[in-house]
Amino acid sequence: MSSVNCPIVVLDSGLGGLTVVRALRRALPHEDIVYFGDTARVPYGPKSAATVTTFVHEIISYLLPYDPKHVVIACNTATALALPTVRTAFPYLSISGVIDPGARAAVEAAGQRQHPIIGIIGTEATIRSRAYERAVIRRRQYARLVCLATPLLVPIIEEGRSPDDPLVVMAVEQYLRPLIQRRIDVLVLGCTHYPLYKGLIARVVGPQVAVIDSAEKCAEDVLRRLRASNLQRQPRPESASLRCFVTDDSPRFATLAARFLGLNVPPPQWVPLEELHAHGPARAGRLSLRPVV
Ligand code: DGL
Image (cartoon, rainbow, N blue to C red; front, side, top):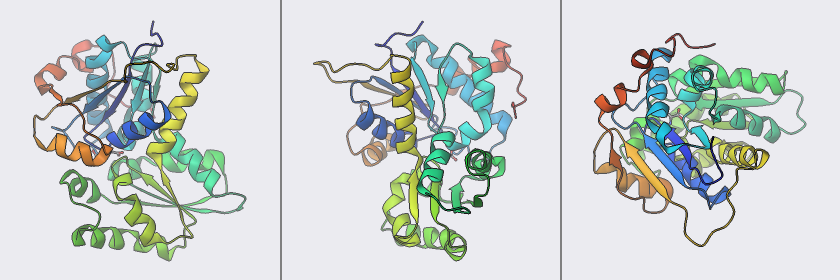
């Protein structure tokens, strides 16, 4: 049984989930965090639901010895493809994702409009899954959605290009043009990597469009959950810890992590994929690979 002193586990395909860590640090400054970036297998965006579900299962299973009081799937793709299945596989764990908080925030930002036009950008898998459409329509039946896959952005961000790089500006302008033409009211950054380019994206779509950062909304959601279950940690003299795991032992992590987080992260611990495979659903024999829809 988890206690108030247990850490929050945050996982993503790569560095993008660190934007959620940054938001969690602000919302819950006293919580210890264990971060897992599956940097050897990023991107998840072009992969199938069965593959991504297996990856997420392996990571959660690997981190069980840390006795997490909450697990955040800080990746829209993994949330869209794997969340219901891993909730079934680990019924005793509290697990949340980023899509519901993002959709809720989009509807709030649409205000009283009867037929708001809500744009969503994300990876191919997130857009194909229609998870955002379902989450928005559940809350605002007559919302109109314009959903667009922007697959180049994740590799560009993982490469470490800054938002004023001409290639980045060109990609963002090209991708967002159809959304601007549709006169969207709200734009959801449906990928935890995208907040890194939030300023640029907001500039390109213009001040009339509310840009929703799913990382911030996800952190608010975790805060609400911990409060509701009385698991929020109280202020303490020692500072909260951040421990990072990665599946690819590349020096790039520390440099880019500093940019994503705005602070230095400790050197990550490398987890070889063979070690992770031993925690997979097939080995554990606990989970059908067929995703729950
Ligand atoms: N950060 C992940 C997300 O929020 C996507 C990156 C990837 O394609 O792996 O969807």
